[in-house]
Image 1 (cartoon, rainbow, N blue to C red):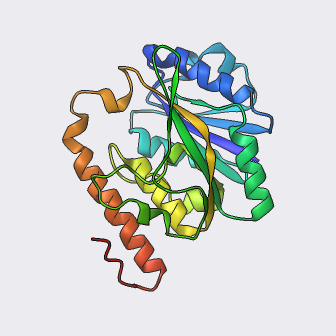
Image 2: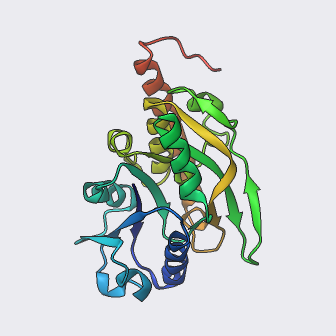
Length: 247
């Protein structure tokens, strides 16, 4: 029913975290598959637990193309009804798949998301409640909780489990960062969905994460501006060009 799509360069400092991500998937109570887009690297570097798991497939890209492109190309390998994006250094909570899958199957909405937790270096976690409130949201309404590009994004992209057709219609954006902002806004603009008031994903806070890298801030404002405008325009087009002046 579910495919988790991950892009990775299999960097040495991330291999243990990728193994932890895989371990969090093995604790799920519903069937899943995973596709790992190897961004300019080779399968021989894949940690043994993943290499030996028949549920894990790889897509080998002959050169580095970046996370957005790698993730989009991995969509060609998806055979299941639902998709969840994930990063190679994060983890899912133990009931992440079951609670969202049950919601999707029982309500017929196109996507289901949850809250996330920051996983700190000492092993503790810190809950992050996204600006979008819990409950059902009609197509395009999630964007309205992102009042300006400088504000916190309205929902965590990797907390979203969505129908595969929606994800293919609204994949990662063509950005070197913030590509997942576009993916989240696109999917939530195309179909109604439900946000659950419980954590389903853990973002690992450490020095190797992309947001901690030198130069990240140089393009963040531009990426946010693009993603915010994309969400606004997509919502307007799908609603027949209605005025969406949100100050």
